[in-house]
Image 1 (tube, rainbow, N blue to C red):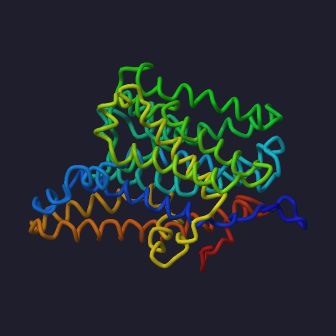
Image 2: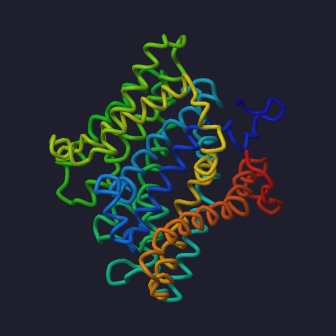
Image 3: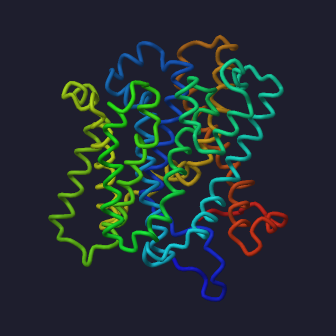
Length: 397
């Protein structure tokens, strides 16, 4: 979608939605919620957990890190696709406009989260306050706004849950500070593609040999930027093919994507025994698999993703950013309430369903009544001045 011909300074509030991407993002954010819920109330009752088996239990309740890695790939794919749609060629990207669009989407929810967390910290909340023996409030705020909360956590240890989710934002937005500049400086999408191979090559080393700090191995910039780079390359390939490849090639790409992504995601013990985890290569293969899936679905969209059965996950996917930032405000109090109620383990599955649903509703409320109106206002002429007249969205595309 191009900018308005009548007013080239106006950017569209949204680009056309892709059902399969919304579905994937919805599934990923549910995995993140389930991980954080399971860390506080292990899934049960024991007989039910045992009946699921260790493999399915691991997939459902211990996939949060892999989900964030896949988010990186999807993010790179969407940002590159959006840039191509807006400017035609990546060499024509306008950095100032790119940063404005990113700020309009990211900053409102981030600033709201930091404001709420600051108030809760100053109020001495047992659930959300920072441990001042490890880090002060101003230092945590500086890390969150300065895109190095991942580095801070590697130095002082895990921060409270609502702070900790911001590590991925530090990686993602650090990449996007450089992305438009590289697009312009390279002047050629082929050269840009070759440059994107650098973080892909360095990613496994960042996850294995560059540091002996396990938290930094998982959360460092290079440990996640290779996923974003894979997504960027996937978008370039999908959009720049001179003609659609043969059906046989499409199927081959699809099968390769399924085998790589699902193999790593579902067969973790086997992947570990192959020695891939030791060198951080399991993440590289997962990223490559997801990138191939995105290319395949760009060539031949999955129409079943638009059906009613997939609607709940698409709904989560439309608000995945807001759900990701806010879900700990549901998970932590809900765990406390469950423990206070001294409920039977038989109620645990219902508790998980309630936590996931409530997290989705909170994310939707934040999106509808705050972040989406701010996003529209900041993209409109006048930018920040237009915030005075924003109204909540009545419908979402």
